[in-house]
Length: 446
Ligand SMILES: [Zn+2]
Figure 1: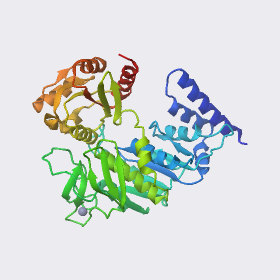
Figure 2: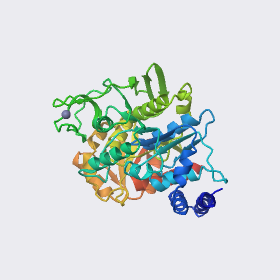
Figure 3: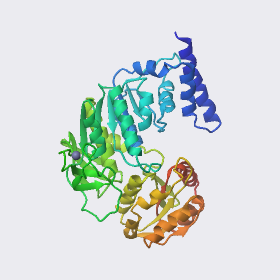
Figure 4: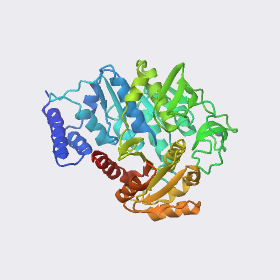
């Protein structure tokens, strides 16, 4: 037995336990320690995975897609390594494997299902070559202004070349993801929604990738789903949306989500069109790997969203829905999800500008807030460090808002006097504190 490897596994466990006792998360710290004690730890543990290793990348939808896939893979009792908390850089990935290992330093796992931050792929792939990569989409993130997507695409391209046998599953409705797959040698296939679901709206939504990555010509669209996702083609070089191996048809968003894919009917009690893509990605990845899907609807029904992904609370008779909205594409999708509920509602929007949020909040101007005029909102309250910017953004489109920097006070007020239907949209650093406040309120009997 390799003593250093044992040390690495035991230290990681100790750190994790110590951190939990002191109320810290400690996941990335555990991974960091394990890797420095025994650098080959990730490579060796990954080799012990008996069947397939999946990785999930992409700007939005990684955590939901990855965790749903892990639920599906483990349904028959298979053991799955998964970084469920979304610690998706190298140390977080190391942690997922190390903390799944037994005290003997070995891993007893059938699958690994790992979300990886796009830029971290080139740091993770030297340790193991995944069997499958799911690429959900490439949007401009809140920190990015110009050129960031090209950097991300170059890194993903390098990662794909490091694992040439890895099968890639991309969102075919996204020209950027599709181009990446086409431009590399990896075997690939696509999922998407081939028919138009929404009537074309006069949206000012930011469209990334408007120009063909192959020849630079301006792309044409038969229709858009949202952001730059849709049915595109390039008049210059013929680059176009690929044929979709996993095509979501008969999409119905009236009561949760329902659609068909390859003769299989899917029904889930989630809101948000973007979840059709997340579910399609999971369906596609499992199909490619030959994983049985007959219990998929049951798994979707049991799925517990992570913090702030359609997370529902019941507080003193008020239904509170918490959602993370960290970039323009995510925010627009959350607004669209709010719009599918026609009943009266209160809305709270929290915007912080800590370093993880992006200190530049100009991205707020890329979000279609004017749509909230038709949201049947009794009130909109703005919170957080940049509540004034948010208020100004709404004022610009003639939407009045209430100002309350403190999220706890804002929630308490709306639970007391509101419509009993409350939506809370927060960006990144507001998520954990808001989640904890809502959890605490839910626990209190009034
Ligand atoms: Zn072109």
